[in-house]
Length: 137
Image (cartoon, rainbow, N blue to C red):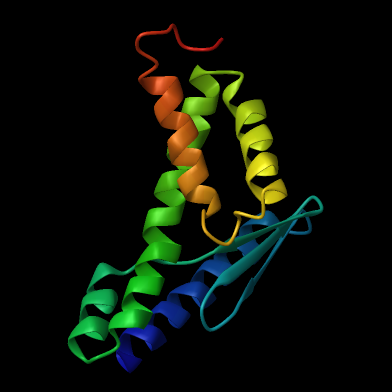
């Protein structure tokens, strides 16, 4: 695991050097041990590398909770976010409906029971399979 972490850190250092060399003053990159931070025109982006073998090794060495948390943070959440963006492009009223539903859940003090991702999946299901009704516009 240590070798994979050092290799990933080396990759972040190389990427930061390449961005700083190519972009000049417009973009700045800073490498950390577990991520690469890029500053561009007042916006900050954090890049992290997902390595499936690292997660498998962690679970085999007894770090099951950490492996599951890493997989959730670096693989499943970005996949979920990309799917939600695609659906919100297909259904323009999805974003407003999600905000309203999340606000209602928080007002009912259910936010400890239902995570935001679960609410998003429930609402997305209503938009994608609206039978017997027509999908909202």
